[in-house]
Each structure stands twice: as structure tokens, then as C-alpha cells.
View 1 (cartoon, each protein chain N blue to C red):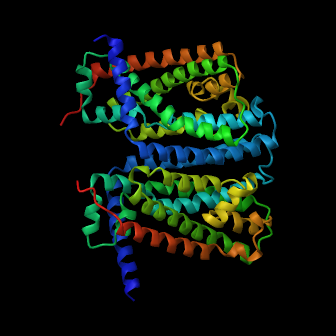
View 2 (cartoon, each protein chain N blue to C red):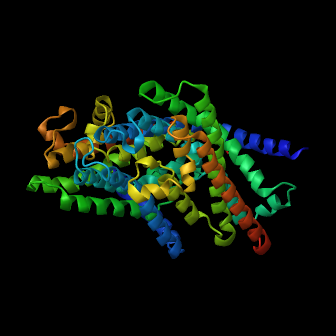
View 3 (spheres, rainbow over the protein chains, first blue to last red):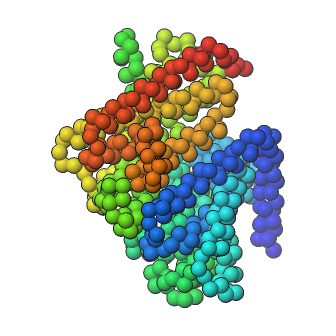
Amino acid sequence: MAERGALAEGLRAYRLIAGMWIRSSMTYRTSFVVTVLGNLTVTGLDFVGILLMFSQVDALGGWSLPEVAFLYGLSVTSFGIADLALGSMDVLGARMRDGSFDTLLVRPAPVLAQVGADRFALRRLGRITQGAVVLGWALASVDVDWSASKVLLVPVMVVSGAAIFSAVFVAGAAFQIYAQDAAEVQNAFTYGGTTLLQYPPTVFGRDLVRGVTFMLPLAFVNWVPAAHVLGRPYPVGLPGWAAFASPLVAVACCALAGLAWRTGLRSYRSTGS
Amino acid sequence: MGSGRLYAAVAAGGFRRYATYRAATVAGVFTNTVFGVILVYTYLALWHEKPHLGGYDQAQAVTYVWLGQCLYATLAIQGGGAEKDLMERIRTGEIAVDLYRPADLQLWWLAGDVGRALFQMLGRGVVPFVFGAVFFPMALPTDVTPWAAFLVTLLLAAVVSFALRYLAALSVFWLMDGMGVNQVLMVTGIFFSGMVLPLNAFPGALGEVVRVLPWAAQIQMPADVLMGETDPLGAFAFQAAWAVALLAAGRLLQSAATRRVVVQGG
């Protein structure tokens, strides 16, 4: 009961702070529209790169353009949701350096909610939109014999993927408590992760695929369930039910990230400035 | 103090300023290495599917990836070099102080940016490049001459990169806010420099166009000179022509800005 109360309180705090940032960004409407468009263009460059590659070849790692677009759409949409919700967490290191993090600690609201909603940027809808458009195109053009379970798996992938990426963001924030200046390391796992998942697993070395299946289970964002949908062999020969394991993996990741965050927060020492 | 020594001191200041953040540098090295590994595998798949794409073999494509990671921060491909500070100084009006200095505005900022580039290259660029050379097959020359020519192209690339970003920064005199310009810098920088795909692998007419734009001076030219894919003198001429043209445009815009624009105050 107490847990649920804390969760509701956190969500409420998150909603209030995010709402404040949305109102502030809406003050300059033109600027907002321009930055959404800019965000859309920047994130779209990855896909332009894939299109340029496919202007030269018919398949990459044995996968066709619609299949790669399917991976791309899933990776970018789920990452976009996590990025919208928690993407501003990379300012955490800066907040600790200048001491303003201490202010968050004394406020009567969960710290994670405050940090997550800090500088909430609605312009990040650009990435979600761009990912969703590519996903829509891919769904219309992949050659798949759709069954009920395959159809259901698509939204499950997006939601679980968003949760897995959110866990990466929270774990990254916990890491920043120890390594304040090294915030950029997080980018290797967040942006690096979503870039990795845009390409078929057959492209990468076996050890790398094993690593992102068993150590940092990004493969469950799209590679494993998408392989089921597309009727392709699973990476690293996982059993058949693995395609449906994404929600479980997501819950486990979130639990571990939450634990890391609490541990990090407890060991936080103010700079004193 | 001779003016040469003045600009050398400014460059040294730029170098030292970035050298202060050691943890951030290590983090950057790690991130560039991870991205390099991801890109190498995708390029290897592409070149496996279509050998000799753009005249490169697989080892050359791999070399291009690691060179791109090495130069990403060095040449501030997506922005974030001297132009960021310059924009902020124009926005706040502190630029007035810079204009009072008995030094040339453009050369002052160029010197600072070259110092920054040198640090980013040594501190952040070399390690991912060496990592790539150790773990993946690369096409590196064993002769001294291509390496020497490569260093010249790097210097010219740094000047072209600065000249582009200086132009962008000056626009803030009229726009008052650099956010939109920064996004344009980011998109054009990533795409036209060949961070997405080497410019020689771009198809058809698009390829013809991107290979003569100034961004081609940044990664494509140094890569081609290093791997002996192009005549060094031709590459120098291409880079120098763009450097001179863009710096001249910068001077024109600078004089227009300082004559007509009222400095922000407050």
C-alpha cells in the first residue's frame, strides 16, 4: 500500500513538473515548432543513411529494406518514448557539479520524478513521430503472414522496449552520481543502443550479439521478438518462447535500475558549493 | 608581444581549457569507440554485399569509420566548438569586449578553436583510432609521405570546419538565438561530412554534389589522402580553396555585423 502511494506521488510530481516545462516551452511557439522539426530531421538522418545503403544493395546481413525498417521503427519509437520521458537525465551531472541537485533532495517529492521531469522537452516528440512513420511503412510493406500473436507482439515490443531503454537511462543517471563528468558514457548505451538495434543482428559479431542479449538485454527491445514476427532464426539460438519474454525482461531491467538508483542516491555526497 | 605569439597563446589557452575535463575526455573516448564498433560492423556488411563500393575495399571502409570517430570531436562535426562560445557572447553582448581587443576577431577565435581541435585529436581521437587498428583490419600506409600529407589535410580540414562554424555563429548577430542555427550545423555537419556514409559511396548525382561541397574537406579528403585514393596536391588545393572562400565570407559578414548591428546589452 505504501509502495503504491509513493508511486502515485511520484507520477503526480512528474506530471506537474513536466507540465511546467511544457508551458514554458509553449511561450515561444515558433521556436517550439522549429525545434520539433529540427529534432525530426536530426533523428531522421539515421534512416536516410539506411536508405542510402539500400540504394547500393538489396539486402544488408541478409535482411531486406522493409525488414530493416521494421527493426529501425521499433528501435527508434521505443527509444523515443524513453527519451521523451527521461532523456533530460544527462543534466544530472551538471546539477551535481553546481550544487543544485541538493535542492531536489530537500523537496517533498521523489527525487527520481524530479530528475526525470527536469527540463522535460516536448520537442522529443519529433523522434517518436519519425520512428512511428517508419514503423508504419515497414508494417505495410514487410512480407509477413500475420497471426493474432504476431499483431499483439508489435505494441508489446514498443512498450517493453521503452521500459528497457528507460531502465538504461535510470541506470545511467545512477552511474552519473559516481562519475559526474563522465555523463557521456551513458550515450554509448542509450544512443549507441538504439543505433545498434536499427541493424539486423546478423550484421554484428557473435560476441557483441551475446553481450546485448544476456548482459545488457537490448536484444529484447526488437531483435528477438521481431525475428519471431518476421519468421527468422533467433539471434544466438534462443528458445521459441523468448520472443514473448520482452515484458519480463523489461520488468527485471526496471527493478535492477531502480535498485541502482537507490544505491547511488544513498551514496551521494554534496559538493558543498 | 608579436601577433604570432598572441595567437599561439590563445591556441594554447583553447588546448588547456579542454584538457581540464579529464573524466569527460575518457567518457568521450569510450563513446566514440562503441559507436566505431557498431559502424564498422554495418559497413562491413555493406561492403560484403557490394565489394569496392565507392572504390574502397573492406579494410579501407573500416579505416574510414575509425578516422571519422577520431575526427568527430576534433573537427566539431556536429558543432560544439568555438562557435558555441561565440554565439553565447554575441547573445549576451560580451562580444563588445572582444571587439575592443587589439586583435583580429576571426583569427582570435580561429586560434582558440585550433587549440581545442588539437586537444580533442590527441586526447579523444587517437585512442579510438588505435583501438580500431588493433582489433580490425585497416588500410594504413607504412610510408612516411602519406602520413605527412595527411597531417596537412587535417590542418586544412580544421580551418574549413572553423570557417563554416564561424559563419553560422555570426548569424546570431541578426537572429539573437543560436538554437536553430546549431541544429542546421548539426544536420549538415553529420550528413555532408560523411558521418552517415562515406561521400564516395553516395549514389549518382547526389554523390557528385556532396563531394564538391566544403564538408567534403573534413573527413573524406583526409581519409582519401591517408589511404592514397587521391592526389594530395589536389586535395590540398580543394581544401585551401574552400578555406579561403569561407574565411573571406566570414570577414565580409563580420564587417557587416559590426557596422550595422547594435550590441545586446543589459
